[in-house]
Length: 436
Image 1 (cartoon, rainbow, N blue to C red):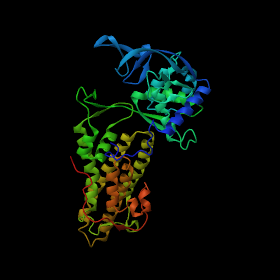
Image 2: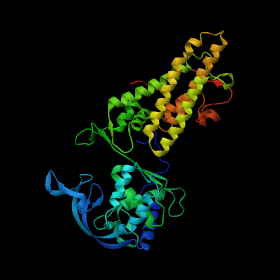
Image 3: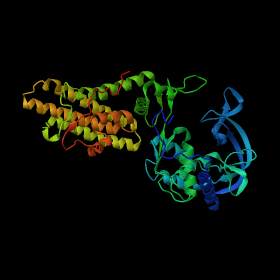
Image 4: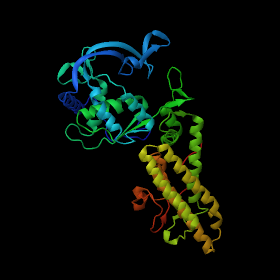
């Protein structure tokens, strides 16, 4: 899946690796030595499917079979469960977790999920959290270092994975900056994990970014219903870049997103019309017979070009802000607005007509200004779309001969303009995006 979608992890940690086992061992010992873990008896509800414990108010009778119980949040079957477990004193950490949550309005973002976490913490007395299972009932997993009759609960084990990736326990080589999670695991990451970290004397993440789920026709995807969208099939159909573009454009933080082939194709067509078509039209022989990126010294910019330059500069600032906040979809909308402005400008300037006026110096200055301004817009847009459509962005930069591989310093600049001599564009026509 990662390879197909052009995604590579900076580091992949297996929970069975020796380094991770050592990290979990040290993490447990640290929390236990500080008095936050004790041996006790757990009584409640457990879901094998969710690998989660639930309190009495988190379960309900199954409507299809009232004799059985299920989790309110997930609908998974639960069984009543009583066992000697190691218990984490969650209630004792409630104040510190709340203090962390209130330290910034974006500790859990968007705010709708932050309010959910604060509401959960408002319970007068949070129950102790089971953090182990008897090894006789759960043989796989990392043993409790001080009592090998118990296995460390999978969620504590798995959460420590974040620390393992940062070099714990030897040396934390990075920061717990931003966790990106689905809304279904909010409690584990925004309550339990910060509580564990604070109990161990470590800082929680600076921010937890929470996204919703994908639905189809407003319904949750389900194999039994037969409405599951296979990402591998989709990537094979439209290519990984365009699938990434649609998913990131359509999704919005704070709500679920609905998958639709009609909207997917419309999004791809919009990008093809505004991005691919502009590149093709502006680099053709009809408007650029010398196939050059005009040098700025030869360009006389008017108020019309300055307006486009302002749009470009405002777009790159706004997009960087939105990307940093996690609102990638809104960032993409800003980019599309910039592209629409670029197409409008190119159409109004009519460089194909100016190109015919070869002996008119003023007309040629206007044509060069149009080409320069359009190329700058395409260059900046390509850079802004790199995290979304890396292959398409690289192809556009390559056509403009400003790709990093060409050694061009200005290819990294997100601002209008490139104040150096011109250069030749890569020869040949290009179809950047196939229309649907």
